[in-house]
Length: 533
Image 1: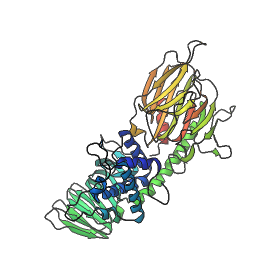
Image 2: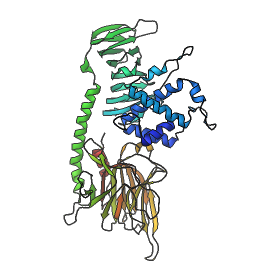
Image 3: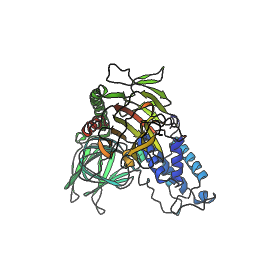
Image 4: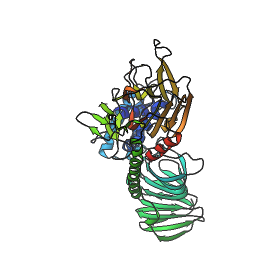
């Protein structure tokens, strides 16, 4: 996205156009959600474009009917031909630039009933921050960057900060039971809820067991208990209606009310100190981020200087004249292993101010040379995967297919972590590949999320083990396990004897190589100290 236009370019534009034409595959939908998760600004524009796109469709059926519609359109599709979809979104971009609210275009024509417009059900809001959340039993924890649609959020303690795609900024404080019903309506069963509703959101409703709060573009707090609902207005005006046959209670700035279960209202003064605001959560998140970054750095000093360390890259120290990264090693008799940057770009890592390497092009890679032959290896890296298609994604790949070569990669087709090496039973025999793969990894644990991947190989024990975020996800027993060697290799790609594409897509923040097998407890500790949230 550029600075002069909100209209996305490149791959995001292509996926959004395909969404408008209802031609997204399941895999492309996952990719689009990953892009939206990584870029909240893009997610906001996507939400606006969906409103404008629907509005343009409503301007007149003759517009789409006059185009040559594909006869192969699926039932339930949007029936917008591909060229027309491009024109619609071009017009949408112009409308956004002119600042015309999408709602203006949604006014029904004379004689037509109004048509309800909703954001696509899987993209109603994005999780911005989570602070010290303790999740209720059986609940799947949310993570920063998660896209959520109609859903119920239950947690026992902590804070969850949401950005709705209609512009509403919200903070939920536990213990909470909060249900997102649509883009404009939610149900607060329990907990404290603080919201900033901008004028662009038009209206926002929060239902409770005591009645319904209707907001008109303001800032308010809501404290819901089983026996009452307490409303505090910090800016603008809200209305609370206990029942369809009751007169709404209107509250202006600085006013509050306790609504009992029978609908009666007891007035009081608003107290902003009772609620964690969106601004305060941003400040707390920034402090928490700085604290976690400092804790990670202190913890990483142990592994940077570990006696079994072969190579350690945090991608912080780049020599811009030679385009190299300095790797660290504990041995005083060995020169540090450096990495030559070929195409990959330095970007943001797990924390603001922490560097990581972004791999996007098929040629992007870091070239290294790790000498020696090893009977044991631990390979570990923090990665954020940007795409998973039906091919292999190189993490650390020795050049070629020589005997003992190490190939550590992700299999995009199966979602498995793979460790491969080559062995020859006789000196004159050709190298035979051995492959040890993990169990399938849930795509949601990889795409757009920071994940700590590790593989431990031990020839003496005859084992190969795979880990995700410190959790064992694969174990293999090896008969006559060979020694391995990395040698000249690529980080994030593979100098393959074939012409197949193996380039990694995403960001690699930290990569470690040890000449021993690390234990599960050690890997779990690295994952806990290095997790950004």
